[in-house]
Amino acid sequence: MNEKKLRLALVGATGLVGRTAIKVLEEKNLPIDEYVFFASSHSCGKEIVFQGKNYVVRELKEDSFDEGFDFAIFSAGGDTAKKYAPIAASHGCIVVDNSSAFRMDNDVPLVVPEVNPEEIKNNHGIIANPNCSTIQAVVPLKPLDEKYKIKRIVYSTYQAVSGAGQKGVDDLENGIKGLPNKKFPHPIFNNCLPHIDVFLENGYTKEEEKMINETRKILKRPDLKITATTVRVPVINCHSESINIEFENSFDLGDVISTLKNFPGIIVEDDVENNVYPLATNSTGYDEVFVGRIRRDYSVENGINIWVVADNIRKGAASNAIQIVEKLIENM
Ligand code: A2P
Image (cartoon, rainbow, N blue to C red; front, top):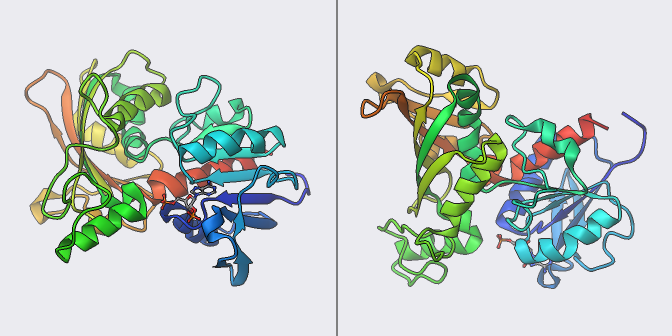
């Protein structure tokens, strides 16, 4: 590594993902010499305490990247990313963007560090962080695809309200108190909403389409058969997913379990006799993906079902982006 002083900009520092990114950056203590925190004009001047020091939040502007940054983590939505990420990249800054703005662009790597770290070097200044529900799914899918070749995937998700930002959390907390919903189209308290992001002409939601397309891109399996139903549930944090997987090749279930156990970033929690399986309440605050209920699907020749839970704000967003920055620093 060279001796250059490294500077990192965190864009969207006041949001749900941004605040978690600050926590994760504190925990990881990367070899970054200077941090600058950006948000919209509403937050300009707010104070953030980071590593024991006070920082003043700056308003993001077109000239914000003139002063020179090595890395920027963007968690400020698609419109902000579309406008400012290319400006940052044109100044030599490598942007890791949490929005869906660039994920499917051919010249933008879509990276989960445990799964396809080799793609990082192919960046042209922008790297996309996948959708939260895709990140936690592809971690267990990758080693299984390498070993048994996946033929088809059926995703059914149970997604936390934190995935919809602070306003999503507010809707659940207000709903518990009997107050009306503002963010979701229906009350989320006491409900499951089969509706995440907007509906498309084909009847699927954009969230379902993201899971399908992003999984294909990350696993480098453009023709993989995948279907998805994504559901918002009244859980504050951590997405849970039932994943049904059909393989081309035969497998031994014990071998599947040890393959998952040996893959980085996975913790297998599977002891049904003692009621042990991944739970949202136990997974909050962790960067690992928890996998359990690993069992054969007897309705097909070579199939399994798994239950996958992860902290959607950490591994599904902030921590994955920071892991990408860690790899960028390692590769310098
Ligand atoms: P602000 O708090 O000033 O509005 P969340 O996903 O929790 O809603 O957070 C979104 C984050 O993106 C917030 O930090 C928000 O800042 C920031 N943001 C939204 N629009 C812009 C913008 N135009 N420029 C910079 N940051 C923005």
